[in-house]
Image 1 (tube, helix red, strand yellow):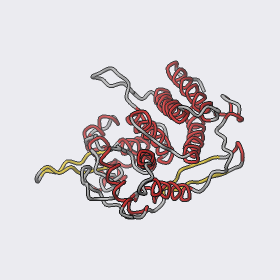
Image 2 (spheres, rainbow, N blue to C red; image 1 turned 135 degrees about the vertical axis):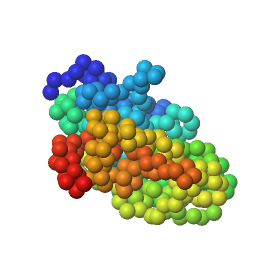
Image 3 (tube, rainbow, N blue to C red; image 1 turned 120 degrees about the horizontal axis):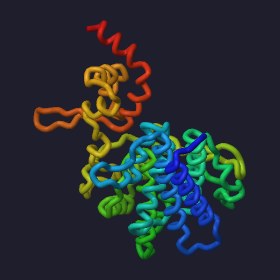
Image 4 (cartoon, rainbow, N blue to C red; image 1 turned 120 degrees about the vertical axis):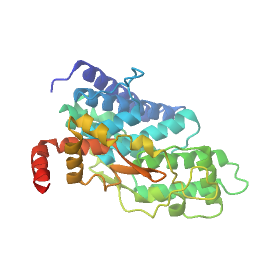
Length: 348
């Protein structure tokens, strides 16, 4: 596949950062190892997403500031335009959330959880290279330098149970290991990025989780979102592929971000960041008239799907807004637009 110039440069940066991150993972040097791994792998994610978007000729610069979009915006655009699946996006968001926690404060992530995330990201990078560039990771680095572990990857339920048990033990009286316990809590909260599109870990969240664990709440009550997280592991040795998957989890109840009494780490975030496209914005982005865009939305039933649409209410007035995922689904259906419009007109 012939690449446009900027896509070629961005792809090279992504692979360079990936190699740095994997080298750090396999390093004998422990000091700063986790930080180095997460910093380079997060950069690899962002550069690869931007390379795929540029190759698709999707604009990635803010018109007002003339600066390129950040990771979260690029990931949403890649899901809408480049075929990045939800599970792939979740793996990249988790790396970004872990990197954010490690870079800005204190994070303690177990070796096996770090391995699972690194190996899952290697799988995702390979899949995006194949899907967006007709390429493969094996062409850019020898298989021997992919993340290795002296212990086989355990089931994610086992790993999470171990972490929760470890946190409980660290918080027992007179252990004086509260900082490590809070660092491990922060890592588990960052892992919510696998199942939700936006994760923000605050000290209030850490306080609430710590208090909930101290009074004996179970894992499912404290981390309800993580109960829906699963893994799929295929292959052996250097050929192993790791995917994080979603399944039916425990019931989730949203709480205010500053509610000190609720144990669950499920907070209300700014939905306007996810649902930011009006009906007019959708029509303009697709090059359709508003009536045609409305017909396409009705055909796809987007207005009734909470993954694509959210209705903001101000008093008695309601305003439906849509996500980048809605735009992506509509764009994929454009080849059917003439037939959809014909049927709409016949129905009157």
